[in-house]
Image 1 (cartoon, rainbow, N blue to C red):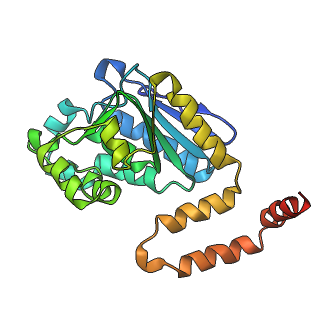
Image 2 (cartoon, one colour; image 1 turned 90 degrees about the vertical axis):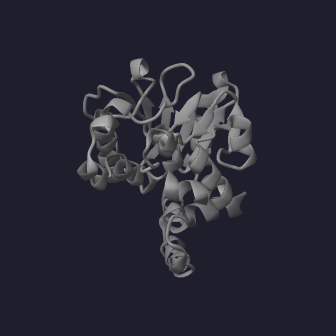
Amino acid sequence: MSTYRTLRVEERADRVVVTLDRPDKRNAIGAETVDELHQVCDRLEREPRLLLVTGGADGIFAAGADIAELRDRDRYDALAGINHTVFARIRALPMPSVAAVDGPALGGGAELAYACDIRICTDRAFFGQPEVRLGIVAGAGALHRLPQLVGESLAKELLYTGRRLTATDALAVRLVSAVVPPADLLATAHDTLDRIARNSPLAVRLTKLAVDSPADAHPQLERLAQAVLFEDAEKYRRMDDFLAR
């Protein structure tokens, strides 16, 4: 893959590990990071693999978008949906993604975590949308993803007030699937990816496609996915192995 300035990217056979790498800016997500995340998406769309997103600095996931850049953006930048577009692309990747969150995930950092399929965090993580305090809206996905994740009433409170969710709160409302000590974060995230990777890649991919599709596409999409899988060689191999046991 390309040379990166704001990310560290590790390629493995079944996954790509992306580590945000702007420690001097608390991993703030600026235009350069967005461009580099698009490069990662290019690769994962061509060669579908699992994705792990995490923060490199100890105790920091991403402390938001780059405010200095946001200060200078105008209405045309807003209409272009700079951050929203790349997060939507991550959400639509063919294979599942996991966000491993340690410390603050605020503003655009939280929206990056929301764009992933699964979130795991440490006991010192917290999530929040402070945009209204800066005179803007959470314009990179939180306005529609957060209500889907935690329910409309709680999402509205968080978006209207800027209140932060602690790791304990995030687990209670199922925004995250697990809370672990910082030393266990990456191992737990990789264990989740390992369990996904042991399954049929095509079955996982079609499951993600179906789950992420609009409600009015069901059950037709499930039937079509099952029709494809019923005649897939991997299905016969796995079922033969199961019966042989």
